[in-house]
Every structure is written in structure tokens, then in C-alpha cells.
Amino acid sequence: LVGLGLGARRTAFARDAWHDTPVFRRGELASGQMLTGPAIVEQMDSTTPIFPGDLARVDPWGNIVIDLAAGA
Image (cartoon, rainbow, N blue to C red; front, side, top):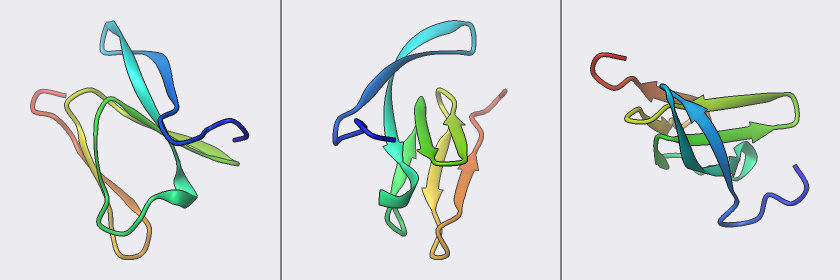
């Protein structure tokens, strides 16, 4: 994950369109933090996409809970 500083972005394809997408390091997410899709969360062994319109939050145990957009 070298190079993923604050403000890192990537172009990603989701739901039939390209999106300018912020990229987050999983270990730097705080409990209660909210992410609105599109977003990408990366860690050493996995990548979690948050699709456009979805809403993600980090629970007190560090899990990413994603609420899907209507019709997703």
C-alpha cells in the first residue's frame, strides 16, 4: 500500500461507468468513520469496493458495514 497517502484517488469502473474514486487504507479507518461510495478500501490481503450510492461505516470492532443503495 505504499503511495496511498491522504487524498489518494483512482479511476474505477462500477455500475456501468468510470468514477474518480478515493482510496483508503483499512488500518487508518477510525471507529464511526463513514464512507460514501464510490470508494476503495485496501489492506495487505484484500480490497473492499464500496459502490456508488452505497454507504459504509466502521463499527466499534473495526468491521466495515455497508448499506447498499436502493435497487443495488
